[in-house]
Image 1: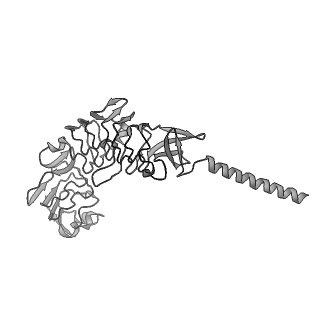
Image 2: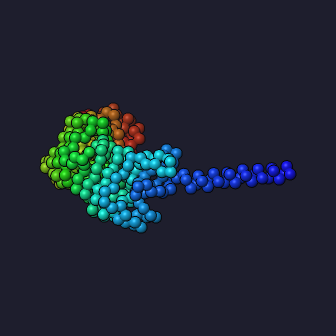
Image 3: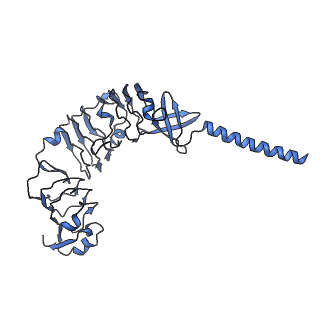
Length: 357
């Protein structure tokens, strides 16, 4: 009898445990599980932190092309089976080929947008936001060397609390402007940066075809490639080096043969791809104020033979170009050769010569 009771207790315990596991499996979404609330499909990104991403319906985006139609309003949080989730991301291909979606509201809780999330949304007319800082800091993935997947490539207007944005004053709390943030937005006429900016990332204003006025009140440390390409503001600047405060943004226009450039004193940063494919550049002089040379600043400068660097402290250098270490003579201030040779990156130059500047 006692043995039978003991067996029954074990059976009861095991069956109860199995029931709890099954109920948990059915009720509690785990990472990667999908569910739908109020017509929008979500995938669980982190079930411990209660984070979800908006995603496509079905097994893949093309299974339910055009499934999101009309006005789509993404909430900043949702409740599913008694559990609250924050909506922080838009998944890869979430709205791809949703050609019948006419407007979308994106809450400030969203900080990440996946690859091709808005690709093919040709019917999109309006994008609505309530927090300009959150939008400025939002980055969109690349879909080509220069272009990204900003929905502004399709939409006619970006609306902040119902007001069409045409003249942008970047909020004072924004330190970094996201990649492709305003790409393709043809309603934008002017941009003002009132405070110091750490970075404006790649293609942020690419192909803003009516952007004629850009004002920097404070300093900026980094501007990514293609950021202002395709804007009247850049096109109207004179050819040659484009300086923005203490930063050398890029070389504009066709470079004459056998060009030697002297970067002006006070310049602290040279941007990524600043002299990209400037094959006519043969010599460059860098000022003593230089702090950093960003990635691929001299990529494709295959005829560059001489670099005169007046800085006593080697500037930070991520890369110069593929053959710099064997083809270029680096001239450095007298008494600094060992400092340069012992530097992790500047030390890669094989030909270093001291010089009295």
